Length: 483
Image (cartoon, rainbow, N blue to C red; front, top):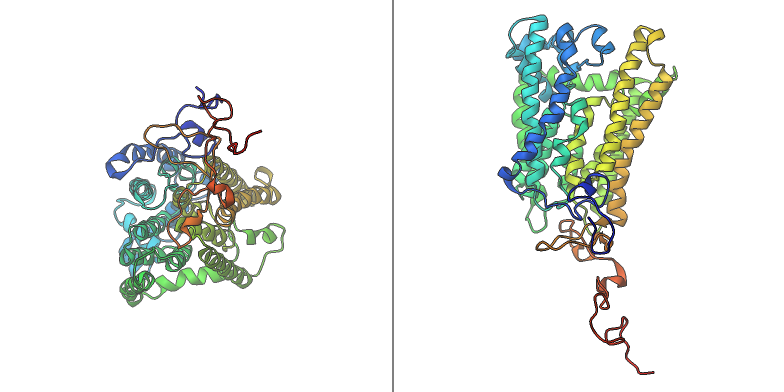
C-alpha cells in the first residue's frame, strides 16, 4: 500500500508499533470498559510467560541455590520461609513476622499466605496461585485505568497489556500492589476527583517510596478550573494516612519502622547505581547510601517542580515518569520488580514502542546478569564476574535514563505528534505537528499542537496541489503583479 504521496507504508496500526509516529494511521484507542475487553485479554500473554518462568521453582521450591541457577527465584515467595511470612496475617500484625517491606506489601503478602494451605513447598505453590491471580487482576486494572483516563490522547493501554517487563517482574515482588493505587490516583485526577485521588495516593505511599513523586506531581499540577484541587487532594491523603497508619502503629510500631531501618542500614542493593563501588570492592557506607538516596528524591522533586512551572503545562504522567526514573535510579536498590512502577506511566505518557522495547531488552539482560552474579557469590567458577554484572547494570541504567530524557525533551522542546484523523480521511505522514501547543498556555491538558512560530499561519497543503486552473491563476505565493 502507498499513501497519497506515493510512499509505501505499512498496514494500518503496524507503523506505530515499529517506531513510527504513533497514531498517524493507527485506529483510535478503544473507549470505555467494554471496548477495552480485547486489550485486557492480551495481558494474558506476559502473565502466562511469567507463570511459566516459575514452573521449575514450583517443582523444587524457592529456597536455596537451585532457584538462582534456574533463574526463577522470586523474593516475594521466598519470604514465606526466609522472613516468616508463612505465619499469615495474624503473625504479621502481632509482630512475629520480621518483614522489612512497606506495610501495604506486607499486609498483602501475609494475607495471601493465610489463604495458602499446607506448609513448605505446598504452601509456596498455593501462594504462587493466589499471587498469580492477584497479579492478573492488578494488570487488568492497569489496562482499564490507562484506557479510560481522560485528557491524555497519547495514553496506550496496549503498552501495559503487552509489556515485556510484566513477564519479567510481575511475580518477583509485591510492588504491583502499590503501583495499581498510584496509577488509579492519576486516573482519578484526570477525572477531576481530588478526594479519591488523595485517598488512592495515600494507599500507594504505604506500598513504596516512589509514590511520593506521584503525590507531588498531582499537588503541583491541578486540573484547570477545579477549585481548591490541591488542598482537597492533600486533605484526603492526610485523612487516609491517619486512618490506616494509626491502627497499624497501635498494633505494632515495628511494621512502620522496620522498612525505614532496613533502608537506612542495609546499604546498596541490586540494580542500584550506588552498588557500583561495592562491585569494585569499595562499598559505600550504608548511611551514605541512604543520604544519597534522599538527595535523589530531592532531585526528583526539583525536576517535578521545574516541569510544573513550564507553559504550556505538560501532562501529569509525563512529569510522574521523569520523577520516577530519578527516584528509582538513585534509590538504595533497584531490583527487577521495581521496574513495575514505570510500566503504567510509560503507557500513560504514550512512549513509542521502540523506546519501550529497548528498555524491556535492557531489563531482560540485567535480570539474567543478576542471577549470574548471584551464582558467582556461591561458585565463582560458574557465575558472572562483578564487572560483567556492572556492565549489564549500566545498560539498564542508560535505558531507564533514556525514558526520563524523552519526557524532559518532550516538555522542554516538544516532539513530533500525529495529526488527528478526521472522518475516515488519511493523514499525510509527511505533515508533522508539534507539541507543545502555544494555545494551551493556560495550563490545560497537553494536546496535539500546531507548528510553532510564524509557520503556524501557513496552510498545510499548497494551493497548487491537484490544480485544475490555468497556469499562474493559483500560484503560491499568489502572483499580484503583471509582468
